[in-house]
Every structure is written in structure tokens, then in C-alpha cells.
Length: 275
Image 1: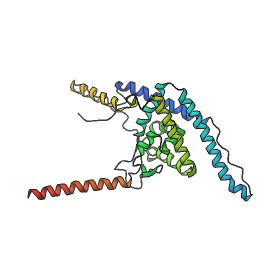
Image 2: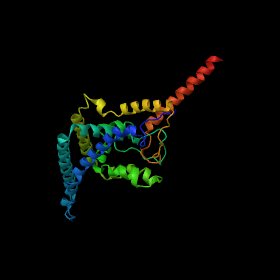
Image 3: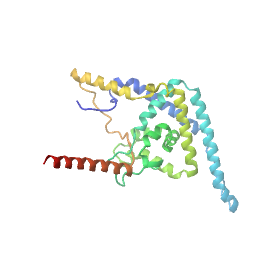
Image 4: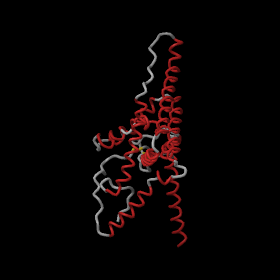
């Protein structure tokens, strides 16, 4: 039987997990909605006065910070008031969502744009995202579920524009964000995750937010079904571009090439020793 990871969307065995993930998406929607109800800082009006023009960028930056701080405050209040199960479901969803962002070994060449949001070109991107320590986590909080709904459902799945929709939106937002705001936004995303972790009691009850047990149990169920002669559900969503692909970090490629070279050297030495 072919090995697989996850639970097919057509298999009712995954209904419990899907219900929790759907609730996690609802929490993300509410977190995003908080920012949409806060007015954006208006840019200062153009002026010919040199001093005013020099101060305008600083004033604009300060206004953005004040707005982001207010949004953070309101989000933390919402998290503090939410049911514990909502926090657990959000954490579960966010952990699964992190696996959608990939820097696979096969992602080489100019077609694959680099992970620009954090140090290491994404070599530790998924973990940083889960912790809220990646700027990308702040971007997802700002954009909400609609970002993923577009790439996964409403846009035509076969075009490069769709496959890279989330990636390109994130990179465009990153390029448009002043560097002095980046650290502030990254810190806000981290505080949100810490608040969620605290509410969900992740440190003492990690199993309740860990998706792996669901997949382990399903693997056993699927094996039992196969042994009894029952065919697995037909896959109908394999065309959906679920993954958000970034270029493989150069450091990871170098490590992989060294590993291949070591294996080749070991094979050569083994053949030589037998002669």
C-alpha cells in the first residue's frame, strides 16, 4: 500500500480534524477583522517646506506604529476573552498552515523567489512562522483566510500566477514595508502566538494542538481498511496548489551536495576495499 501523509478531504474519518481547522480559520478571520476596523494612518499632505518634508516620513512611520500597537492591544484582548478550545483550534490550524510554506530541495532557479522575510533565506522558515517570529506570520494575520481562499479555490489552479499568488503578495507587501516597521510587526506577531500558546496551555497540553496523532491514527485506520479489501477514497483535490513555494536556501543545497559527495566517497571506498 502506498504511504501517504494527511487525510484525504473525501474521507469522513477526518471530519473531527477538519471541524477544528475550520474553527481555527474562523479565529484567524476575527483576528484579521480587528485590523480592518481600525482606520489606516493618512499620509501627510504634500508640502514645499523642506523641514516638513523631512519630518513627514518620521511622522508617517510613527502613525503606522501607533495603529499597529492599537491593533495588537485589541487582538490580545480578544484572545484573552476567547474560549480555550478556540485557542487550541487556532494553534492546531496554524501548525498545519506552516507546512504549506516550503523551501524544497527541488526549488532552484529564478522561477523560485527567495524567502526574504527572515534570516537564513527560509532555512528555518516554518518553525519561525509557527512561533510567530517570522514577518510572514504578521502578513498572514493582516491578510486573513481570504489570501488562501483565493489561491486554493477561486483562482484557476493551472496558472503560475495562481501557484505563486500568496508568495508574490507576501513579497510585494514585504518590499513596500519600511524596514523600521518590520521588527515592530514581527514582534507583534510573536506576541500574538505567545498569547495563543498561553491561552491554549500549549506548554502542558501540547498533544491537544498537535496534528500528528490524527495522522497516525488515520494511517492505522487506512491500513485496516486496506487489509479488509476496502478501497481508499478517491483523491479529487490533487490539482489544488496548496503549497507556497520559495527558493531552496543556498546553505541547504550545499549541505545536500556535501552529503551526496560523502555517500559517493563511501561507496567508492567500499568498492575499492573489496577488490
